[in-house]
Image (cartoon, rainbow, N blue to C red; front, side, top):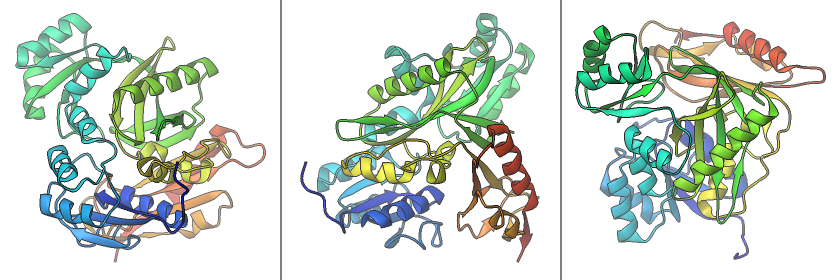
Amino acid sequence: MTTLRSPGPTIGVVGGGQLGRMLAEAASPLGVDVIVLDPTPDCPAAGVSRDHLVGDFDDEDGIRELAKRADVLTFEIELADQDVLEHVREETGVPVHPDPTTLRTIHDKLVQKRDLADAGVPVPPFRVVDDVEDVRAAIDDYGAPVMLKARTGGYDGRGNVPVESKADAEAALESVAGPAMVEAFVDFEREISVIAAAGYGETATFPVGENVHEDEILRETVVPARSSDAVLDRARDVAEDVLEVMNGRGIYGIELFETTDGEILLNEIAPRPHNSGHWTIEGAQTSQFEQHVRAVLGWPLGSTALRAPTVSTNLLGDVDQSQPAQLTNVERILESPTASLHWYGKREVRPLRKMGHVTVTAGEGDSRGDLLERARRLREAVTFESN
């Protein structure tokens, strides 16, 4: 490999949300500049990036300009257009990681599940939905309830509708409003995830996290997951198998179910840094964001070793309607010796919008249950108020 020097190259990022912000923060100590493309003039990443190009995620002229100013392109949001990225790569010769073909797989949940199942990755039983009779047939085959999913456009649980009976099938399908698929409902012990990195001829996985959801939105991640060593080893093996299916370098957030009988089934994949990996900033030797920077540049991957058991909790909008806002009582977090506050720089708070997160790391004698309780207390101590 060519000798690396700092300051180094520039990464162009399609998307300037909180993930782009944390990517830029992680890149700076390495001497790597970040330029983002995002349609919001004051997007979260704008204040910490070298520059911000205002443009939509499928703006070909904007992405072409981004490529002219960068050594490699990546994305922090799946709304990036794979066809535009492919065209700009062919035209400019600037590499894109992960590969746009991975986006094509990820964008359609049915295609994603088919590709993974064909590769031997364990997934729940699933089938395509063309009409309401397909949903009812799935209930006959899998039992009730089943999970109806929009094939495209869904995230954070949006577009996922549990169908409790055949009588509910028609209304559920209407609520999805677009191409759909249906899966058997998984009787799971816990939801877990593996943050995995594909680098230049090497891969790495972080310790397995246990994810706590409410209303289909991630609330907390506990690391290491409170499961057996055998289950955690199996989860990492499945994550490595997933990387074999994906194309291109970078971080992949791999969401999994641990079933009640100790099996691992794949839920979904995000080809980018993931909310369930935010704990790595304080809890791992290398954060997922630094690892993504290293991976897309083809640099050696960093150590994924656990510094200490860690819990992260999301700070979600606790308001009834959108409004300008600020977080109050932050001193409660700052006074806690093992807690770290991350604010995403969003100007407006909306109901359940992710506005930041808090990470709590273990001190001597702390159990993961202690950490989870402390993180929840700190989260409940702060609130949003209008400016």
